[in-house]
Image (cartoon, rainbow, N blue to C red; front, side):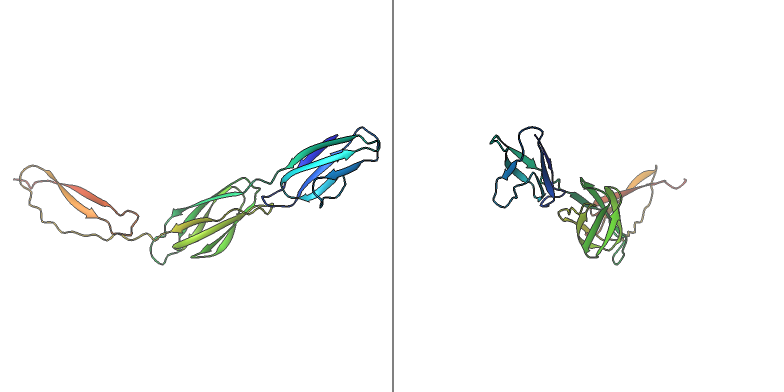
Length: 205
């Protein structure tokens, strides 16, 4: 006797199956599956993932029992992160990187939030481009119809850096270095303290 289970395509799906083939014994055979709702036949389809127990009995009363497992399906995993801020407030040139694990190409990635739309990827990695700043929710669907869990990310505006300073320098003697303190504005991805060093030569004597 051979028992062949076929797993569900997606987690939560109901397209698994089981087939039993017999090569000995005295037909006809009766097939009983644990659970009142399953028909008494050698092949079952439309099954969700799970454990299935069966008993096969030949016409002379010889019985064989066993259990087989229908896999529940491998989940489609979606990862996303912001790969590029916009070039400034009001611009729509932000980017989100997308990567997928398992599932079957092509993949359709839908996004909603500050903007909405969909893009099809032929491979497991890609970029969503031309997006304004804001929060985004992404969901992927593969060729089998498996749907990922949502992935959340945020695109920020790149805040322009405006800084100016006026220094009066009177070199005396040998060349020396002048340290210019800089502070980038809050809200910028470069928000930090930094400095600029300039070498100034003394005038000729």
